[in-house]
Image (cartoon, rainbow, N blue to C red):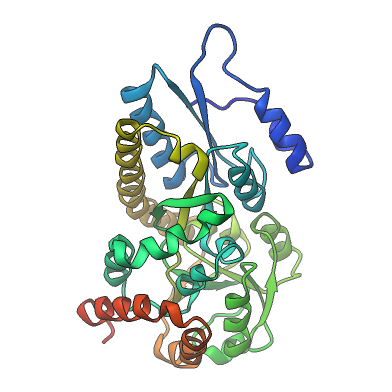
Length: 343
């Protein structure tokens, strides 16, 4: 994997970063078009493994024209920075959380709803259904970018420093870090906790210093980000299954010749399949490490009380965003077909 221009991480503004990228080419006699992809995960994370597979695939097919560079670990800035860079075309692709994309298109609000999907199977089937995904993925075209595939980020659950979460009442008064999304803040209000939005990079220090009492994320946060060194209880309330999204600059994508665009589409499918395969292995390894090396206790509370509290958010969302109702109903069909194991 090629990690070029590491000094980019230290630049303080989008303008400076964009200018620096424009001058950071392959050099020498290499006249290939550089394709830059940014994300915020470590090099051993399933997301990075999948993007490296994409890099290798595109270069195996179109290596005489394109030089693909993958930048992990926020080398190109925060997720918000990278989305803005993708908008302008300073970089070509980045991985963004669904919660960030909610600020660019209200359609992404749907995927942030707690307990939208009844099971992992319903989640995967829904996300693979173009009738569900495409209206949402294409809704940011006017902003200069569009989603090209989704990336499995598992289920989001609560984990805390010292308070086991067995029922919603256990959250009362606890300061819980959530993603910077109105939907997530409202979810915590209903569940009785105190929502504390902050950037993901700030969470470890906030947990360690007891500025917050816990957070919510998938199992990888415990190990890859060290949160399991501080938080000793991980509760499978399974309140959200939110995809990460690989977005691409529209001008770049629309400018590809038809035959090259077809190869890129195959590459996007490869990202999705490789990441999902790697995700299953990574979660298993993370749970093993968290339990046996970090001393994290995994709890399995009854999810129904949590779900019942959050049900009002579904009605409110559908009332506010009526155009999303057909997509929501399509997801409910998959939920009926693939119910949770608890039902």
